[in-house]
Length: 62
Picture 1 (cartoon, one colour):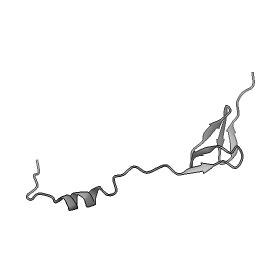
Picture 2: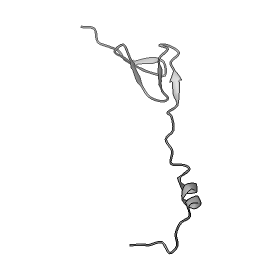
Picture 3: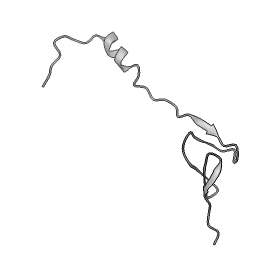
Picture 4: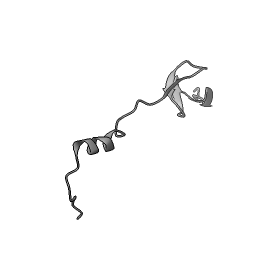
């Protein structure tokens, strides 16, 4: 197993870790329904599945 020859400084370690942070997902508001949803994802509203403001799957009426 590999072992480091020298101790890695706190500065060098922290420089590497600057990109390891959680980001908030990008949200969008539907022009048709007005609901807030994650970008590029289908979303359910009142039993109907929407994508890009259009109904993809409609709720079946019994």
